[in-house]
Structures are given as C-alpha cells and as structure tokens.
Amino acid sequence: MAYSRVSTSFSALRNVHFFYSFSRSIGSNALEGYINLLQQKTPQMNLERSLDQLEARVDSSCVEAILRKSSVDRVLALRFFVWAAQQPYYRHSSLMYSKVSKSLGIPLLSDSLVKLLQTYEEENLRLSIKTFKVILNICRGAKLAHLALQILRKMRELDCRPDTVIYNVVIQLFVDKKDMQTALSLMEEMAVMGLYPDLITYVTMIKGLCDFGRLEEARRLFDEMCLRGCSPNKVVFSALIDGACRAGNLDIALELLGMMENDVFESKPNAVTYTALIKNFCENTQAVEAVKILDHMQSQKCAPNSVTVSTLIDGLVAQNHVHEAYDIADRIAKAQILGPETCYSFLVVALLRVKNIWEAEKVVTKLSENGLKPNGLAISCLIKELCLIKRSLDAFHWLVELVKDDCLLTVDSDLHSVVLVGLSEECHYVEVETLVSEMVERCIRGRDPHLSNAVKQLTDAGNECLALKLRSITG
Image (tube, rainbow, N blue to C red; front, side):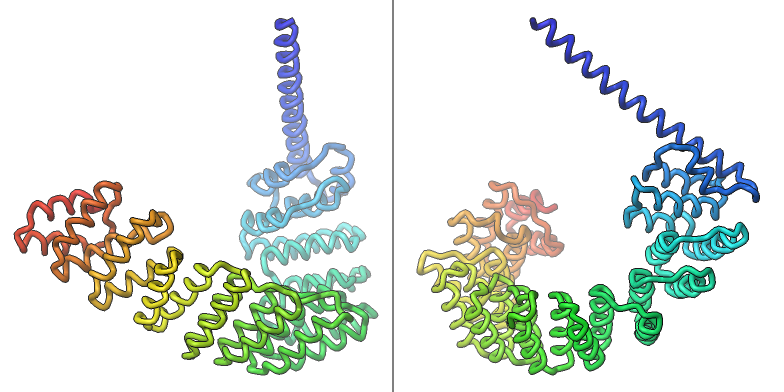
C-alpha cells in the first residue's frame, strides 16, 4: 500500500515535470518562430496576417524577449508589440508599456513610432481604433504628449474616428505636462466631433485645473458635468475642496462638502474627506473653525481617525489654542474613539513642535500619575528636547521610567546615545555609569557620532574605566 502511494507520487511529479518541459518547449518554439518571421519580413509580406498564421500563443516573456532582441528591427519590434496587444487572450500590463520606452529610449521610441505609422500607410493597411489605442498607450508610458497629439491628428487623416477613450489619453498627457490650454482645446474639439466627455475626462480636467489654481474653470466643468448627468465621484469633490482651500475660499469648500452630504450624489464624504478639509483649515490659520468641521463630521455619524485628531490638535497648538487642544483630546478619549494615551501623545508631540516643553512634560507626568503611558514618539521627542535644553538628568529619569515599564521597543533606538551624550556633557557620571551598564546588559550599541566626545570627556575627567566600557559599545 505504501509502495503504491509512493509510486503514484512519483508518477504525478513526472507528469508535472513533463508539462513544465513541454510548456517551455512550446514557449521557446513560439519565440523562435516570431523572431524568424520578423527577421525575414519583406515589403510584400503582411506581417500581421503572417503572425496570425503561426498559431502560437504570445505571452509577456515572449514580448519582452523580442523588445530586447538587438537583431530585430526596432520598428518591427514595435509592430509586433502592437499586434500582440490585440490578441484576444493577451493584454499588455502597464509595466510592459513602460518597458517599451526603456528598451528603446525615448528619442528612438519617438522616431520608431513615427516610422511605424509610415510603414502602415505604405502597406495600405487599414488601422482599427484598437491599434491606435495601443500606440497611444505607448506614448502615455513614455510621456510623449506632442507625439500623441500628432497620432490623434493622423487618425482622422486615415479615416479612423477617435473616441472618448482616445481623447482621454491625450488630454491626460497634456495635463501631466501642465499644458491646460491644449487640454481644454481638446475637450472643445471633442464637442465639435459629437463626442461627450465621460467621468475620466472630467476627473482629469477638474483635478488639473484645481492643481493650477484655476478654480472657477474647474467649477464650470463641475456644473457642466452635473448637467450632463455624470455623477461626480470622491476624486472630483476632493480636488475641488482642496483647490478651494488652497485659494483661501473656505466657504466654497464647505459648500462642496454640503453637496457631498446631499442625497443627490452617491459620493458621501468619509474620514479622509473631512480630515483633508480640517488640514486645509488649519493650514489657513483657522484651526478653531476646523473644530466645527469635527463637530459636523461626528453629527454625520463619521468617526474621526487618528490622522484627523492629530491634525486638529497639531493645528490648534500651532495657533496657540492649547486649551482647545486639551478639550479635543479629552472629548475623543471620553467618546472612546481613540485611547487616552493616543490622544494625549498627539498633544505632547504638538506641544514639543512649538517648543512648549514645560506643558508637554506636564501632560506626560499627568499620564504617568494615572497609570497611562505616552507612545514611543511622544516620549522620545520629550527626552530629546530635554537634552537640547541641558536637562539631561530629567531626560535620564524619563528613560529610566521607560525601562521600568518595558517600553523600549516602542522608542527611538538612538535614545540611549542622546541621553548619554547629554549626561557626559553635564558631568553626571553616576548616571552615565548606570546607563552604560544598562546598554551593555541589553546589548544596545551606541550610534551617536558625538559619543566619541563623551569618551574623551570621561577620560579627561579620570573615569578611564567607564570610558573604556563606553568605547566597547560604541558602533
């Protein structure tokens, strides 16, 4: 029975090996067939028909190998690439489109695409819209906006009517080049041709206009979009809200938020939307007004996340509204949206950013008295700030508390070194010895570049034994 099972297993393995070898053989033969055909191409040969007649399945490795093959003419390699993309069982990935420009280089790729179109014309081939989409996607991968525009014009010469998808590719390329005027003229051209912009067109244009501070034009496109029955999504609303905030027009931003909350649109605001608006209000020195957005957010049954809370607390503290920042931390903690340790850690970091070390230390002390622990970022920042103002002894005591609470994994790995340098500079040798012993015991390497100065100070002070111990752990 056991022999039977082993025999069956070996038989299965042989089958797998045969299938793998057979697949590789087919793939290798297909590649050789394609390469031979491309190398033997004559002016009279219809390459696409000949490739179809090979009846070999093309895959990404085959396409990549032909792009790399130096013996294959570059224009023919591109022609093969365009043909492969139109096979019913295969589709190029976005990575493959980027590999075309890498294999040829942008200048050579541009020339090769022009020659490719000339070749199609010379052979009187009727090109489908799908062929042009592949060629334009190559342009998109290489960011060739002006060549894409030439190809768009060529389509009409060759009696191939472009559709909205084609225009979207070219419009996106000009938006990426910050040429909004050309992008807008292409939209007007679409209307002349009887084509209607779709959601992608509007998203691309509205986002582009907002990025360049052209809010009024973006609003006009938004209104047009709604009139055409094209429902705006979160990307459109977010772009408009962000654009309004950057223009300092916070009333429009709030109006847009109200539209999102309206039942007419399916794009309901989420925590990311509200947080972005709060961030923009804080950056426009209106942190107190941003508190009202938080109120509104919660009234809409949308719970703030950690980014929302930290952004608002940071903004309030930066604008000297410390009392209001305390209120937000209290409120979020009491509502159990986030834990008190998280909320007050945000407050500590915000206070330290404005160098209000006394207040930050008071918050940390209050947390400790209530049996709570600030997070690693908060306590690391506090310890470093204390060292900067020559209070390394206090920094040492907070580090000891961390060790006692076994919280070292959550803090900056260089914290011991920072405190050690401070203690040495302020001649607290008893604490230096304690800290060095702790580092040796926990196998913590010293990484601060100033530790060599600490070693020298200890040596000069006659603490050669301690200096030697410190040198042994300095990385």
